[in-house]
Length: 446
Image (cartoon, rainbow, N blue to C red; front, side):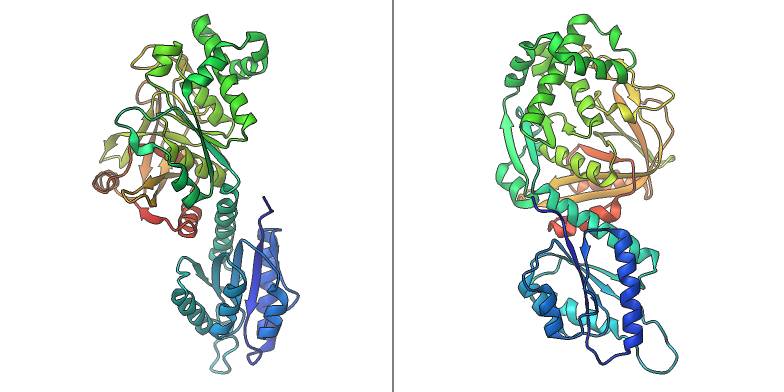
């Protein structure tokens, strides 16, 4: 994959106030340089069509930062989009001086011309920001657009693997090759779960020393697990990890019940938790769209994310509890408790992760949803993760929503969302909204 690149295109006509145009151009370049080294910039504002064409001809990029350095008619934008197919951030500069005298930039009128043209061309999913290059809102918007566009490009080079099929009644998470490729550009491969079980069974424990040492280091009471289950878990972890490395996989959706309890004798839960701790997105119940959601959350937050079901609501506390059987990353364990190990709450076989998750002042609940027509939508809600004890056997966290939790639950059930969500330990709402727009997804805020 080629490296990500953005182009800063400061357009305008040469008849406005040159000193103000130059000043805003220099401030913009300085700010953009501080945001990312991946933004290519011209030496001077592009104030004529020939200047613009001379700069952009034969160039490729992933993101256009289109700034009305001064007023520009729609011909400028038309030429840009004729030559370059990329995501767009349209940026209007704040008029620098209002003193009853000359209009220095007239950037805003130029933005209307550009926006109108893009709609007529069918390029409606562009981002927009108004403000000076020193404005924190502008700086954060540019950062978010760069992050979202860069991730969109990165997804096209990544592979997701479905390990086994979704259980009966869990078809909401089933991955379809063509749809995953269409909406995310990702490669989707599939393997039967028995193939990794068989690979694990054939492994000698001496070949699993590295995985065993990692597990013992991260998991507090693994030694309390019966020897056969502990050894089977370590073998299975190595089998999964080797498969992932061999195929350059970024995310997996793994079947779990009943196969691992019935046919293998040891659950896969702790294996998925260890993978998540290593920033390999790993969902259970073969939820491919859950795994993609985890991957996006990990990439944008740079942290492991929680995967689970909304299982409890407290209207007075304004919270929703998210829970699952025991697949959370070790790094999410509350420091008071640590990465405790237990048994599956229903099957009574271990090891599984067994803890309440650590708190966070920032959190984002997210889900890539598949609509009945096959198109995608983004569920986004922001809030915090409270400092709470473990709520149920397995792994859990308590999310306090910015909006009423009863509305979050009632509306998302009524809107037909899947029962699996991810919780990221950072406010990534802006990046998700931009990424969703760039991917032509419907954005649903709760």
